[in-house]
Image 1 (tube, rainbow, N blue to C red):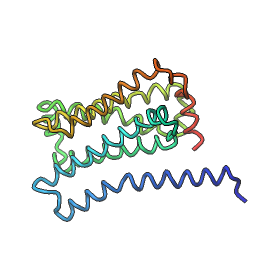
Image 2: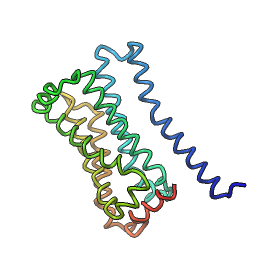
Image 3: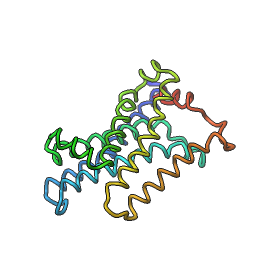
Image 4: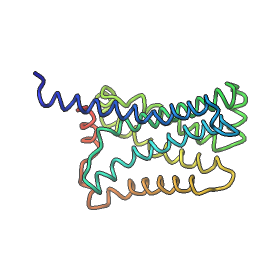
Length: 216
């Protein structure tokens, strides 16, 4: 008969898988809209934008885990890995649509685009920063890298800043949407900078957070 601890672990695993399924539904819905010609006059751009927007949303949710715990005491640390990986999957899908549908796998066209439009360069850098984070988002890497894992995963702050700038620069005018996302990202980054100097700075520290993930 399974112990209470084993049952709890299984329930948690089911919740994580449920999060992955729910998290990928927007991509499936966008694909369906594209396949049925319901993405407007420029379906490729619309599909690309939707995937990029959800990538930024999941990055924001990943960074929100710590402030939520600090303010409410509710810990969602066990779900942060899934949120981070969902963000990476969406960034990867966003990049794939750009490469395959937008640029037709033309390396020369991509290079020209990078030279011509700086926000493409920023987006590429953000993607590159997320690759090692996704590859090391597992228990083996946490054990192997130790404290270096914590240092490595601080790159997420640079990546999300790049994502917000990429979105802001990708529009010709500055409508409310990219400004709002940039403001949210800025607030989260400022929270992270100020956190060590606040009264809550002695709360659960990153090494222990990694230990929480290892218990998954």
